Image (cartoon, rainbow, N blue to C red; front, side, top):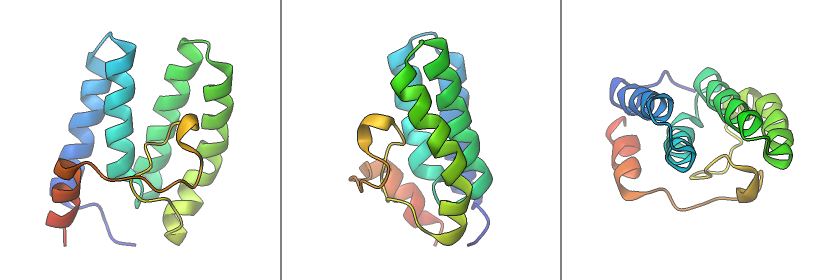
Length: 115
């Protein structure tokens, strides 16, 4: 595991800030999902992202999502550390814990720029 590059860190931070700044829950989820894709290889940012998702699920009183996020908070850091995470996964309960997904093109470019 390597440290998060400056370009990935900037994109992750921007998505997390955008999630906090909007009052529209669907937009907040979209930003958190994008931040999740960027954070997967990094234990603390990945866990922090799931904590934010858990907070939003609790605020929405979405029990299924909240329970799914509790599980993800527990496994995020070990999964990142061991390199065992489904690339492109949005981090939501509906996505499935180990379901690989297509990385949006702009995020794929950001992730590729770090290498």
